[in-house]
Image (tube, rainbow, N blue to C red; front, side, top):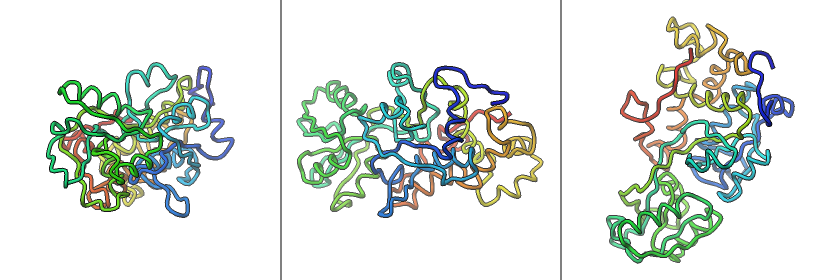
Length: 326
C-alpha cells in the first residue's frame, strides 16, 4: 500500500475495490439529473458522474462502476454493511448522520435547500399560505423534520402524507392526494418532469433549510476517505483553473504550477493516496471538471434548467471552493 497505509477497522477498501475491478456505487431509485437509469439500464446524473470520476481516478475507466439503487430508508444501512463502497445519492450532510452512523461525508457536490411545489391552480405564491395543507414527502429523510419546524414556527397546521419510495410520492401528488410536494429544491425540478403536466406546477420561492448534498463513505479507512474527498476537489479545482475534458491534453504542457501538480506533471500527489500521479488527469479526461458535470446533468440547457446559483465557483459568487493540490 506504499506511503499511505490505511488504518482502522475497515482499512484497505482501495485494495478490495481494485481486486474486484469496479466500484459499487449507491444511488437513488431514479432522480433525473442526479442518478437516473434509462430504459436500457444506463445510469446518468451528477451523482453518477461522481462515481464515474472515482472509477476514472482508480481504473482509468469511467465505466468501472456498478450501481445499486437505494431508497432513502435503506441507503445508510447499505453503506454500513459494505454492500456499496460509496453512497452518491443526493444525501444531506447533517451532524447526526456524520457522527452517529459510522459514516464520513466527503464534500458537497450540490448546495441545496428544501422547497415546496404546488399546482399553479392552487393560487398560492408563498409557502406561508400553506396553512392546513396536505403535504406529500419521503420517509427516512430530513424533510419531515424540516416541515414540522417550519410549520410550527409559523403557527400553521398541516398533514403529512409519507411514502418510502420517491416515485410513490410523485404519483400521490400527481393524483391530487396532497396539495404540496416537498423535498430538496433540486429534487422538485427533477421530479416535476415525471408529472402528467409539468407546466401546471410551480416551485414556491421559499427555501426552508440548508441541504448540503454529497458523497458518503464508511468511517475507518482514511485512504478511501481521502480519495473520495479529492476526486470532488480535483473537479472543482479543474474548473477554476480552466482545465476541461476538451483541453486537458494540451494543458499538460502548461507552465502554471497548480495545473502541473494537478495533472501529475509535477510532484507525487496521487501516489500519496494509492493512485497513479495522473489520477486527476484521468478524471478530467473521462468525466470533465465540476462545471462540465453540472451543465451536462442539471444546468440551464437540460430539462431541469437549474442555474449555478450557490453551486457556482467561489470566484463567481457561489460556494464551490476546493483546497489546493500542493
